[in-house]
Image (cartoon, rainbow, N blue to C red; front, top):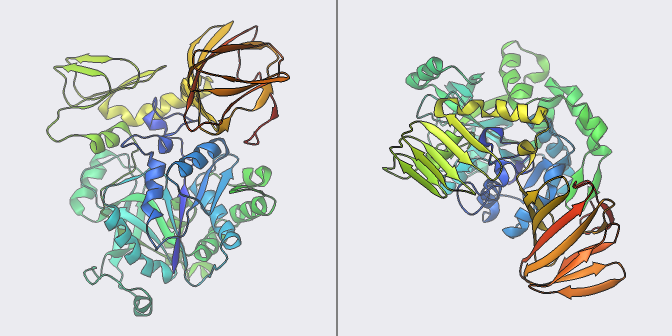
Length: 504
């Protein structure tokens, strides 16, 4: 038996704005330690013989971020499926299930499993996580779709819930295949009575008291063939559109691009709504085509969080005995039960309680803790108004490194460029602007018109409007350059690429 992790990396993380942005969402940010949440998810499977290389489903716009973060931790993917646009988790899982047979040489419907999980979750006990997955694989091998439930420790209105039904015993024939831990309860897996979307506080409190409810983790395990059977039964149109987008898609190295037109016809729907909720209803009403489909929920108590709001992130970052969660250049006085995060400037708080304050270079969030789930509403408004603060930071990632906007007006812009080792910007020119470059750290090869030369620290050069140019860093160190753009139009769109190492 082998398990392929299917990592869903296409989320936007809107409730963690202003640190999480559309172009740099929370899963690709180092919110808890020096690794991103995505990298921590990858590490969960890196040193275990239980798993194959992961299959990643992400957004076309994040392709280089995904690739670079894999490279940073010296890991690889079976494949990276690039959705042309987000369509929620059910289409993403269907794409992955359809591709899996084509990319795994020793694929077998009998003992192949997929473990589907978001890229932005936090798990404290990684060893116990693997133990639970190994144990739950017994139920997935028997043909069930297994979801994982978290025992709630407080009434939480930001999570969905799963009501437990009766306990399920192991199938002996499957037990013989898997060596199950001897201390595993015969009732660590339960039938699913129902799913409940994020409840009101009073209802959530009643769930906690009953002890019969899990938080819905959004993690699933099953045979790929079982998912295909389920989506065929409950949403054949989605399967057909995903199948067509795969058959007409294109392979590009480790990337696979589904055909956009067919994929665009897929319903925007989550796994829970597309299949999980329907299995129980279909079984109860004896729908003939669903009699073989079964689901269950398995307990996953491993210190889990979906890092879905500033409150849940603070719960992870909180130090024992501290009245506040503080990060960055922060000074407090008479401040309690608050979260204060500064990334660019000093932040001072005096006489406040129960607030979340998050400062970035171009935006500041101030919100009462009980209203943190509403941050996404503001982000939606920013998107409608086409505000750049919704989409990206002043520092923007590129496949060759990054640039940060230091100053800008209608006629000039000042940037700081960081060019990674053995990387280069595209061979390009601009119709409306000229550029001045000053090297402040390292050395870089410059192509300018017909000439080619080296610029070292404290040296500079000037590129005229319309002049073909390129910067290349062949060293083992990051090169830092200050770039001053001047012209009648200062826009990122003013670029014509002649040659590019990243096929943009």
